[in-house]
Structures are given as structure tokens and as C-alpha cells.
Length: 485
View 1 (cartoon, rainbow, N blue to C red):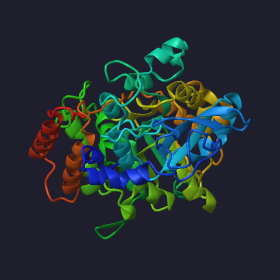
View 2: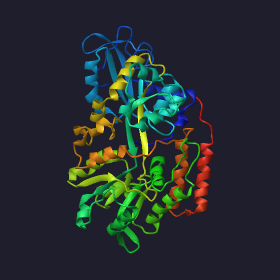
View 3: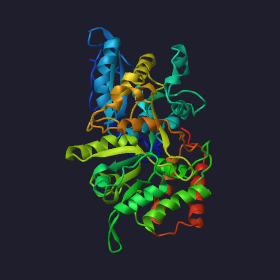
View 4: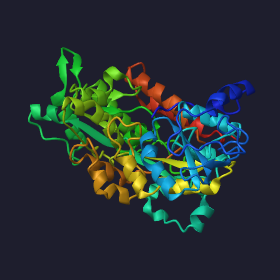
């Protein structure tokens, strides 16, 4: 998912708010199942307007049974949950005829999210990312979400059905639940490989017992050169962004942040060794490509899909849908395992949690809560996790432990043998959810990516002074206070 700087929209001029609000709060792009008709107290007009549905005053609507029902607006990024909602909302309506959900898939979702919260015109339910300025914790700390602890207690909801990392990441603001589990995954921990490439050279397929030495040696075998130029890389790694960097560093015993998110660890010996190892394989040995900027001609996963590279490491296991869409139509065979354990004894990864939340100004919080629970149940998780290649849907899954053992999940369409089992194993990795305590991950990325790219282009040496400089820049950002509303 694209990551952009989102904090800058907050506190903007009235003209900016007014201009974006017309789009953000206007008629949604699509209203899926359960579209209510305007009730007698709500004349036709933009969703969210006075007398209409959503946080600005939900009114009665005529549901499928003809009985009056309360409308609940659900806003997601367009393409995130279209498939899931089409499959699941009809079931919800059958079970809850008094609630009329309206699904609003929203283009440019994250920039508009800032606008609707600033203007107190959000939908009833929003989904949030786990990191950067649009993160769940950022909005929870601003007081725009409904605290859910009382709902969880009242319904005696068994939160143990979710992975422990989910619960930890949901309670990082005041130790309270301001959101509810929807989707989660272990980021940047997968190794995709092209089976045909390995069979051509009669080399055993990658396994999760690979070492870094084996990965380097295998990449050397597959690397093709013409003189001093590499024409085909043996393998490659996703490197750009804070999540990818966390995974790189953790494999060597380093990390980007300390446990409470107040200090950067990028300057530690272990973190320096991690970056140096990968840069040496790219610049000195020239066997492993590195992607920092989604540079398509040198994009490791794309090269693997096209048969121009044998494997690509450091990608999300959920990228399986994109790989399937690229390789299955051509009959190219592929596989997925977890990336090798590094010198620090860890595979590396970064837990990513995207919860749903109820807007504090919602007029229908009880009805919205019923939808949050429904989205978090096992059946919704399985539907989400078995979306076919090409579906307009997240490639990840709900964070319930039982869903990953479901036979339907393990037999997801278009997936080669062993792929879904590897996705399930990724969720059990002991790689924590981590974030900058002041929610300034976007600003930190603006330091990380350009600095690493300069070193990768050999414009600067990645020596002790380089790491001290990047560490100081990141720490200066982390020392800043949280932005207030």
C-alpha cells in the first residue's frame, strides 16, 4: 500500500478543508449492498449532511425488509475491502435487519481522512493503518475515536482469539482499546522464488533452513554478467521504508526503534552490520539487487516474476496475490517460504495491524460496534484471506488465530502448495509491532530512504560517520513532541 505524508493536511487553511471536503464527504463512489433510501427526516443530499446518514446524524432508512433501520457509513480506501464487503455485508444484513450498512470505498482515502476528522464529518466506521501519521494511534491520541473497552467488557468478547501482537498494538494509547481487529500481517518476511529458474540449474528450492551464506552463494550461481555489467541478478531484497528496514536490522540483532519508540537503534553495531551486509552484496559482490524506491527496472519481485531473477526476499507474504496475478496466467511456477534467519538468529519482520474504529461523533455507535465485531469474526477473516487473484481487496487477512488453520484458507484459489501455510507461519514470528512514539514515522522515512539511496548510488560511503549522521537525524525527529490537535 502506498505510504504518503499525511500529517500535513491537519490544521490547513479553510480553503483547503472546504475544497477537499466536497469530495471527501460527498456522494460515495460506490454504495454496495444494503443501500438505504433516505428516510422521511432525511432529504436527499450528500452523505454526512445534516438530516442524513453517518456521523452527522443517522436517520431511519428502509432496509430489505421494509422495516426502519439505522444507516451506518463504512469508509475504507477503495480497493482495500471491496471484495470482502460484497461477500459479507449481505450476510450481516440478514442477521441484523435493523442496521443498514453503507460501504463507501474512497479514493485518496488517507488525505481525506485528515479532512473529515478536522471538520467533524467522518463516516461512522473507518479503517486505519498501523504506522505513520495516518496510523490508528495517531487518531486515537487526538480523541476522535470511541473507546471500546466498555463494549468489549459488556459483551464479554474473548480477545484471546486474536494474535497477541494485535492486542498489544491496539492498546498503545493510554492502555485502552480505541480500535478493533480487522486486518494484520507480518511484514517484510517472505521469500518468493521462481521454480523454473531453480529447475534449470538443478538446484534445490529455497527452504526456511537456508542461511545467509546459502542465500549469497545461490544468488552468485544465478547472477549473469557481461563484462563488469550485471545483466541478470541472482536475487534481490525489498529495502525501502521503515518496515522493510526493521526486518533487515532485526535479522542481525539490530532494530530501527527501541521498545518504547523513543530512541533509534540504527546506529548500533548490529544495525550497521545488517545494512553493510546487504550493501556489500549489491555493490561489491554484485549478486543481490536492492530496491529502495520501487524502481521497476530493478524491482526484485518483478524480476523474479519475469524470470530475470531466481528469488526475491523481504516482501510481505500477502504479496502472494500480486505474484499469482503476474505468474499464474503465463503458467510460471512459484513458491513462498519465510526468509532465512540472519546472523542474529531472527528471520526479521515487522508486525502490521490495521484496525477499524468508530468515530467519536457517530450517532450510531452501538450499531457500528456490531459491524466491527462482524468484520472481526472468523468467517470474515477467511473471506478476506481467500480473495482470488485480481480481486479488489487486501491481500492479507483478519488477525484471528483460528482462521489461519481453516481448510478454505489453506486451499485459497490460485495459490501453489505450501504458500498459505507459509503465510500462517509468518504470523507466529516473534517480531514486534514497533513505532515512533511521537507518530512521526513519515518524517523519519524522509531521512532513511534518501540517505540509504545516496549510499547505494555510491555518492557517500556507508562508514561509521554515515551511520552516526543518519542516527542523529532520526533521533532529532524522535525527540520532537507529539503533534497536538
